[in-house]
Image (cartoon, rainbow, N blue to C red; front, side, top):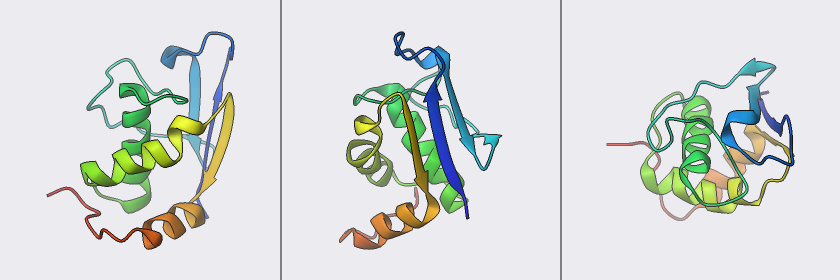
Length: 106
């Protein structure tokens, strides 16, 4: 089972340049689209959008639709604090609960 985990190395800074994001103990690939400076979380900006997109891309094995990763960002990523985890089972449950079936980018 995949486990996604992130933490701020210096929580007081709250910057994208000072975070660690892993999937099963390996660095999560950053699929750059909104934030060339890196991942972040805890608000609704570009760093959180790229984190949501990259987590879902890793989980799905393909590029997620914009509506899917933006919804994921607002449902999960904006609420995360200094350290967080989410499992592939939690992601699967959330995707299955969505009425919209637009999952992959076109």
